[in-house]
Length: 160
Image (cartoon, rainbow, N blue to C red):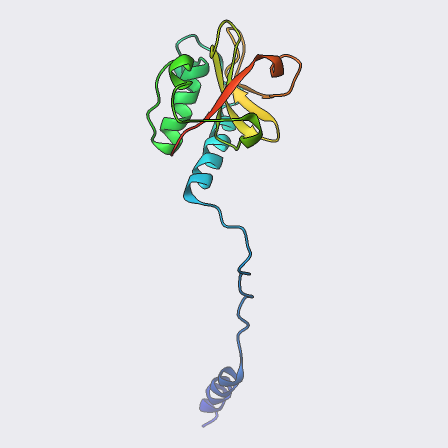
C-alpha cells in the first residue's frame, strides 16, 4: 500500500493540473503570400553571394558572375525560374513596375553602356545587390546614390 500511495497522489495531482494554451493569433496579423516569401528568399540568397567575384559571362558562385548571370542564378537556385541570359532580354521579362512599387526580389535596370545594360536585384530600403564590373565583387548599393539614380532604366517583377 505504501508503494501505491505516491502513484495515487501523482495521478490525483495531474488530474487537477491545467495547461495554458498560447494566445490566439489576432485576425489582423500580417500574412505573407507564397510569392512574397519567395521574393524575400530571392533577396536573402542574393545578399548571401555578397563578395563573389565578377566574371564576364560567369554564372556560378564558384567561377563568379556577371550581372545577368547573377540574376539568372539567383532566380533558378531560389525559385526554380529560368530567366533569359542577358540584361536586355531580362528587361522584357515579367511585368514593368515603377520605382515606387519596388519590393524585395524585383529586378532593377540601369543604363551604364546602353539601355538596359546592367541589372540587379532589389532587396528593400532603397538597396539592390548586383555584380558591378570586371575586378569588382557582388555588393549591395543604394539605388538613389549619385551614380545609380540618374542611370536607373526601369524595373520588372518576375512571377515566381
